[in-house]
Image 1 (cartoon, rainbow, N blue to C red):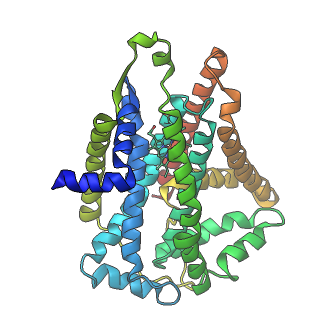
Image 2: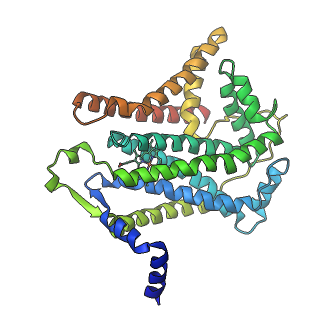
Image 3: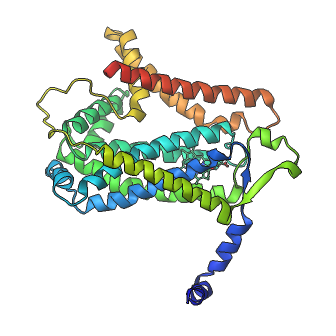
Length: 360
Ligand code: HEM
């Protein structure tokens, strides 16, 4: 029966060709192979986001009823709290997995020729994922969401000329209100997915086309000493085992530490103590805070430009790394790139921890 169904499908869809192709594909096997799973783990959390997001859409109401609809999801709808909690936790775990993925491909030098577009499409996905996070954070319209978004929207305001226009455009008025929720909602559920899916498809196609990069220590070995495993079924089975671990971590976090809903946002109330953005924006927040303490009074604007300019320039240089370190022939550049990666990793971690110490 099973074979008949498979044959029926194969005649129409060419399934066996896909399996034969997957069997031919191999994945390098060496002591750093563990890092090859992180792109797949990010993909797993993305799928969770899509499924749980669609379920939340069944009850969520953008606009003036936003808070009440999230209250209903959290306290009245069966398992609503779990779906909401899974969506929020999975968003955070996805960003964490993405950072691990980005730094591991960086240290494996997988941005080098011919994988530059894999690097750039990945960076675009990371940027879009962070905008997903920022736009989603406001949607429940509780106190924390409101004030954290307010702090976040102060940033573009400082940009010369265009700043006020951007804030007005994003906010839909002088204050965060129903129009802002409507705009963040369309960004979160329509505009971002429309941009995201084709870029993700390109990213995955490029990985498929070029295969996994190998680290320099592996590339230095003669070809006869390098090991690899078939993608199907060997690597895929290991990938699925990783997904199972990711699912367990998510289930534990979402059920043991349910995502909270604070009191309804009140624009007239004073901001609660220690308001800060989500952890993945904490490094920028802290850098601006420190610069704000160094440059005071009339010089405050200099501090803001230095902060925003520094992060923008850092991001651009990070994206351009394949032009600097493009092959294994230049050992000095390869070493420098590794130092740049280490400095970026340590810098982001120090600023983030420092930021949390400052607000606690
Ligand atoms: C939703 C976001 C993303 C998904 C779902 C995703 C998925 C994947 C998958 C499944 C792979 C193959 C397995 C692996 O090497 O891990 C991969 C490879 C790769 N990704 Fe991503 N990725 C994402 C974001 C990123 C980001 C943020 C970067 C870095 C800026 C990036 C850069 C790369 C590169 C350069 C490769 C090739 C690695 C190699 O050849 O070994 N990706 N990605």
